[in-house]
Image (cartoon, rainbow, N blue to C red; front, side, top):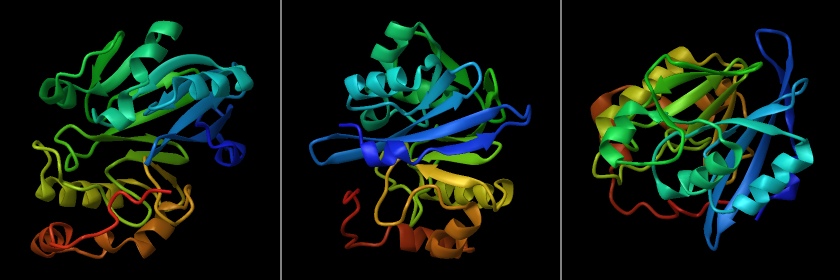
Length: 241
């Protein structure tokens, strides 16, 4: 169901074209599985992009309707079902493109109406909503993050308190290390971080705050990172809020 409280915490931001863009986090769930997807809307034209729609198509459609939004694109960080299962219905209903990394499409064999491949550095533009693709393998081999002028949509690569698990057959812990380092280099400190899941910390903290509190940014040695990420006895990995 739609998390009404989170929906109320929109963040108005400005694109490089100085047209207001708003970010609306949507808390969606199926039983104990809880995710966050995000609507980015051009506040002038009302056209929108949604990141990782899943679980509750009806709630997502209601949110779009309440915003008066015309959906211009769906963007997916990776192919896991809890991030994509509402995408086909949205694509068919709104006749909009769906973007996923070329590598993820090839490995996962994900199929969807309007599916289009993207690569590292690719720019997706829907009116004033502009997203740059950052290839961040690790959780899966084709995972990406999407960087907007004031926001990072990090899927299951980067959480506020940690990073994604390496459970996928095509995931790789060394790739995850390199992806975390890449985000540290490329994402400015004032960018707000919007992950696919939440543990305890509020969503939308600045990258500087995430770097300070997230232990994975302090693990500069790849061997140390590998040992810590893959350590035995981890609990609460799916205790999302």
